[in-house]
Length: 155
Image (cartoon, rainbow, N blue to C red; front, side):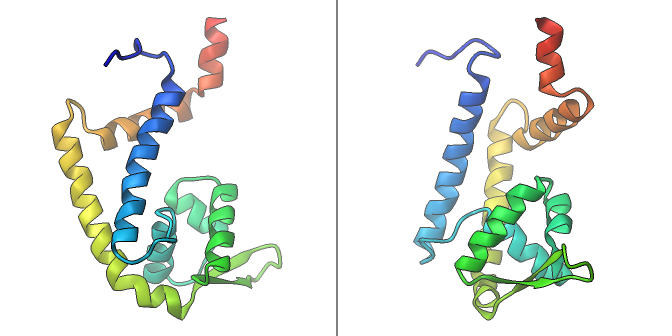
């Protein structure tokens, strides 16, 4: 199989990598009897379980994604009966609470999380550079100088 030269089709290849990783995790949930459960739900459930009810902003900041991404995920989780949203001190803040249904899934989700974390370490060991370290370094570098600036520097 031919590989694109470094930098070419980077976004497409990264999306493909993410699709492979998320697709397999989603299939594990199906294997566990949770065919409609989405991998992005687990960090939310784990954080609210360990820290107690949290705002969408706090979840976004802790997970390291946008407020919009967590808001969309939480709204889907509400539709799926996994969380309830209640107003916070400030009416604009919505606080995420787990439902009994989500709490019932915790033993299964904890086992999956432990196995997935170990599998990620195995993957890192099979690579010339640990993917987790490379992703962290890439996020730091883009935080210091966004891709947009890098592109403009080259134009």
